[in-house]
Image 1 (spheres, rainbow, N blue to C red):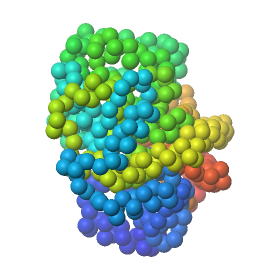
Image 2: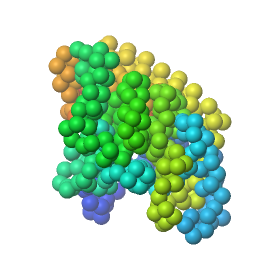
Image 3: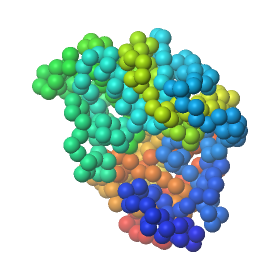
Length: 439
């Protein structure tokens, strides 16, 4: 339950702050380190949320803290559009070499994931001279008007906020767990045919500027497509002159056991959006892509007052150093293997776990009331999230039906922390499996 000081601050919050910003937990943080969060009453929590995928290198990594402090002493905001600074250019140079694709690239930096997606669409529209944008069922791309239009979940993201941006379309996305009566190839073929039908029935391909997809769907429930499906999207884009945008905002920076998730699929997108763990908590995002596409907008057509801030660029450069120096790509792969092994062992014990899936340390379990009917166990999932932090572990839900538990732990989480957190999870699973409440 909430600690005394957190309860007092929550009362003040409810008076001063509108109800729209939601809290997964009832705690108020005092400080955090590595894979743990400590609240204002001194209670420690094992963090499987990582600021919703922001803390891949861990909370308050000393290298990031040091460079941010140093940057703050030098200058905070000259605005890149007024006075350029070295760190912006250096970060662009590094990402241009690290993002998948054997072609010349350029980068622009912004503030948030939504802003990165907005700008990727702007760039694609400018380059192609077309307006239409295709996204996918269960996809999540942000909360601004355009990105909310591309996002696929009514509550809480879209309800009551229309009308939405025009010339946006959604297509089905493979969900292998829920189509088990078909083979993976049959599922892929079905969805690829639906895309081809769309170009006949809904919008001509010469009117489509971009197709945007998440290499692993995040808010949609950590749904992993096949390599064949992703390559088919690449082929469709090539055939029709459509810009392929990979939304790597949640999957990037070592989360999936590769530096970027698109590496798993042997496919290079034309544009890639990045954010979240890019700055280890300092707001920064970016669009990285083919130089000729990135150069389509004219001078002054891209940017923003705080876009690519000095603090964000400094933090992002430090993040790239830490990932390399601490071998966090390999650590992510190993952590993911440990997580999936423990989760699959739980699946054998608890019928409520319908599916275990993920890439690297981007792992999830889908909870169902009945494995045969696959009825979403939304209430049970909510119970685990609501009670996990009260027992000392912070968990997140996801999925269109809010019946997926997703795990985004800092990659520096120790094996002991992982086991302790999953011990809490297993007790909660036992409680919901038995339909009881052992609090």
